Length: 235
Image 1 (spheres, one colour):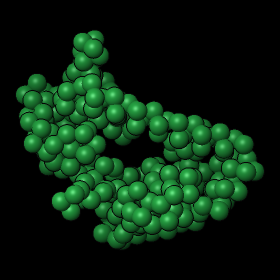
Image 2 (cartoon, helix red, strand yellow):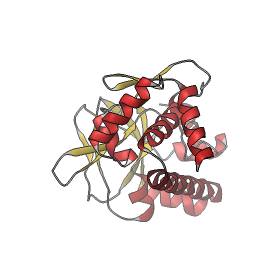
Image 3 (cartoon, helix red, strand yellow):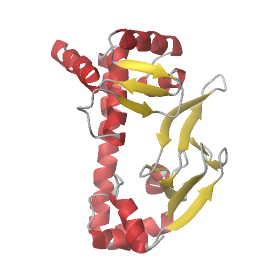
């Protein structure tokens, strides 16, 4: 990929999207393309964090193992998504496993090169701080949601977050979102058991908010927003 094309990819990411074209070109010059076959391990939990990955094509799955040895997926990274950034930025180890769901091509930024960028370009440093603060806010909101809201509202918020990323048109009557994992695997990101998630999805189905089709969810944004809004007014 040429520099301008890579800069365009960076412009769609949460980490580098706020930068100017000039700054994105500077970042683009430090990236290297990599590819992984479907089913290939990208990194494992406990590995050293050596690179940040930006997905260009395909999908990767981030997961952790439960106490029973079952893989619990909590994120599906698609085009424009970034993963592996925390261990690189804080110098720690990987906190999850990353597997290529499909053949996936990424742009990789090594720890040494991101450190050079942070030291030499204050705008990149500010973008990194803003990105990490956004991640912290999301984590705080997730913890608050688990503590204060019923499971149906947690699922509604989770799906709305996915719709915002994948399709900005919330006014559409129905939007199909492919989470890349089963309804049972929703248990991890919404903080509930598999049985409670299944029961909550049945409730959402009954009120017309969500229709399930394998790993796809056909959502009514209006119904989902109504659920989250009524929950906020009841608090």
